[in-house]
Length: 158
View 1: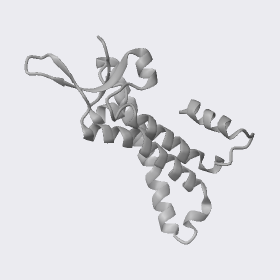
View 2 (view 1 turned 120 degrees about the vertical axis):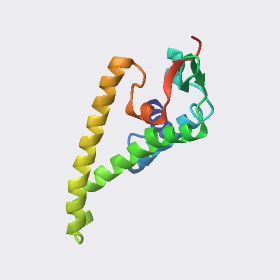
View 3 (view 1 turned 30 degrees about the vertical axis):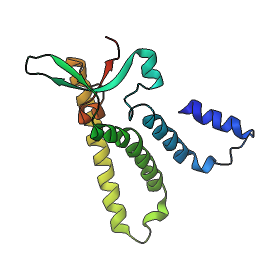
View 4 (view 1 turned 90 degrees about the vertical axis):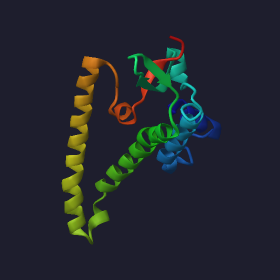
């Protein structure tokens, strides 16, 4: 998406991009467009195409064989949520927490948020580390998001 963003800046033909204050939203829009024209229609991403990989659901049949299936609609929407929407919201919330004025009138809310957010971050970091260890041992899900959605990167032409 950084290449697309740079091309948008070049198209404006100025040193200062007039939409700079919407950079986060433009990034999310570009990521959503990439998702729409790749994952949503069961096509590999540009990088995945170069590596001969795409996302798929892998199920083990009763005979023990691995069956590669296209992603379900729920998995595709979960992909959008976990790869695009949740990171965007996390960045926006983190930026909002940096501002002191958001909780001036509600000190109880500030204490609640400042005690919960670090714990959530710590739990997430622990889960990511555990998933990485499991990945190193069994090699199935490279990311926690993949494990949550039960999707894997598989070869297009094995």
